[in-house]
Image 1 (tube, helix red, strand yellow):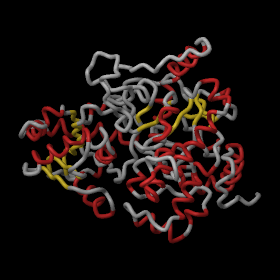
Image 2: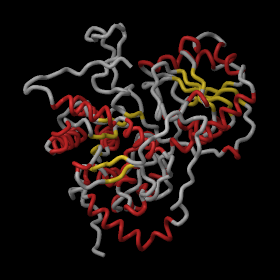
Image 3: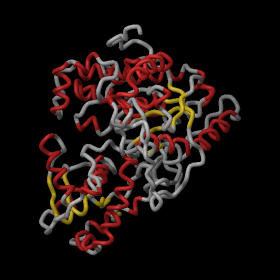
Length: 478
């Protein structure tokens, strides 16, 4: 087998080349590495699932971006001496060994600021897994864009943004001297020159934009595409003056919409708790996070002041770094309910940490959008509270105290069945290996598959426009 180049960031990201490499490797190592997980147990969601899928796959073509725009960014991240914002012991260990600089598929950072947005890494890992190990993957690779349902753009947009924020934050909103902008421009210029983009206007292209500031400078240009986002908080803006809809607070859907885009889970930062490991919970309600936020997160400060002195309620300020992580594990596993108020955006990874901790989410976020809705019923394991009710003195505590033990046990049982749906990590380095059938990556592709009729209709409608006719994007009142 020819030697594999250690770190050629300018090499094209060639799917056939990677297939050949991983096919040879897998023949030699399949029995050792994957024997324990080559079969996957399907988890039943009878009481949670709303819609069965009628197709077993979606055909995906991967755009041939250079490695410098995906795994090369990881090599670059690990070449930094440190990440000054919020490090982790695991990241320091990787840097001390230099593995992150030389591995063809480096690990993704454990830094929680970045890790929570790591969907791009796990989706990509599945797509470059050798074909014989992908029998459980909902996304089926095709080598010709004309055979594809969608075109996946393998740009690690979150990592690109976080590299810029970590090294030269002062120019992030500017274009001059902004390497993240230069990478965004390189991606857009590349895809817009392809026949696939020109055939569809980009409507069948898929971008992973989990960080709210990912691809910030080119959002208008990728607006027609299918965007995988954790919520719409970083995209929406209130603009009643320009709205042609009836609501005075209509949120403009000129770039994102539940109709064309897919809400994906944050990557959870806390370990999963199995239902059999659940113990008696002594606290009523738990929250750990920043008290002061902006925009919609102002409700958090008001809730904090209302709840801080309530018996059975624990309100802790902080982020799940090394110390905070242990506090969060302890707090979530010993509390019946976990508070999930809006922050700078309507949702956060805290919700998915609560689910993995079997702590019943209490969602106080009126504009929240959630992953896989239509596939899972969140009311089976979560409590939704209007902001107006939550801000009434003692209302929230009294409401939570009204749930019986039987109701809380049922919530927790349903949550345990739903846990796997939100897990990205398949247990293999780089995500290269068989996927769990009901994990997050497969569920994301299932949601994209549900968009296909709309995508195809939009492409056909675009073709019948006379030359030179421009139709503005309409707000979609959802």
